[in-house]
Image (cartoon, rainbow, N blue to C red):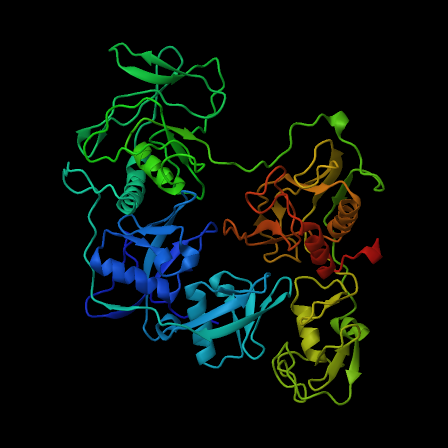
Length: 619
């Protein structure tokens, strides 16, 4: 289906506004780590609009309207959302839609996630679904929006076209999003003028001012030149000496976490600068003043040096000691104040944010041991030509039985009644699969038109002689995938995973090179990329971990671990992606959600393997 127009208006400065005398529905959105704009709720958007009317350069405390958003503040001038307890900053935007669209009517479309809770769709998807719903379309294809999902309105379900996984969806009424008309004035740059008066010293004012300052100082700080070389082979670190036109601080020593040794030397003109001694290994990615990285997801924590220059007028002098709650200032306030001081060139030292421990310590080849009970340490897959069955009717008849008197209910493939003809009548013709013939699958008992099952089988990327029930995902036959050729290695290393300190670790290494897509892939003959290989994954070396390894080997040989599609992380198409069997790629931590400890992971991956037809009975 064609994508209905969203009617979005966004200006280059990030604070969009519609043309004069045109009514528009306002939806505020934030950018997540996958590059997708996620809408705030209607109640939150009303709150933001109310603050915007009072002060276009102000800050919005989201916790005042939604308790779950209490750590977040939006700075309207820089158009960033700031999380107080971690320092994470994300861009926000003000989007406009037609008043007759879903947000204008207070209609929200949501899908059921793995936690049995409901997640709202992105706003453009929500509008597209509502438009199709109002036009009484039986189904909707979201591929035009970059998602491989089909929406079926009769069963209120979402089906993944690649995996056939089915999820429930719902349509609910909520508060309508705010309506606006005309334009709003541009916000000015902060700070304005040369106000040298002392600001209010209450914690709320300091909180808001620090957030605003940190947000707006980031762009300026990223433009500063941080490194300058000199003749003796050292790297001079230069701090900004001015802020808002007034001299604030002289150059000083900067302390950076890591093995680098930092000294204070004097240049030819006698000005002291901080240097890295070349005799020590200084990390090239060390974060230094003026080199803030707060636009990406992550935390930059700061602490004041023990010696500092006199505080100039207009800058709050707060005793920021640490972020562990033991200092005289609340950790959240200390963090934001420290970020402000760093961006303004104040003498602060930066420490690295916690980084995920992706890999174990180096392991000598002689310490890598084979996994007991599993022959060899490597499995390779080559490009195989899929053996197609004689015809699709034979495959369907192998797993179904004819139903003489079908019940008066929907066929969930064509959404027509089982008592009537298949929706594929006139589109698909097969001698043995008449439009009114209904079949029942042997294991699960779900019923469909035989012609619909034939069409589903023919429309798949592959015809390997297996069939999967579109309702319960029961697999008939041996399911194989479309994984490109590659190599899987596995061995035991003498290190333990968090949560499994009583055993060693099984390391799995997947390696798939880039190549050309085959006939079973989305775009045959086109090149595909393979990013991030070799990929290292980890399991505990215990009884359940070894059983999962055996099942993963079976899934690898059936070409089910990876597939070719669109990356959810980068948005790149025609690339190798995971195929709904989750792996742990973070060895010593769980900062990304792909590591340990995770007490439910082993059971979850067994369930995911079972959903692909890979079960212990096949070992």
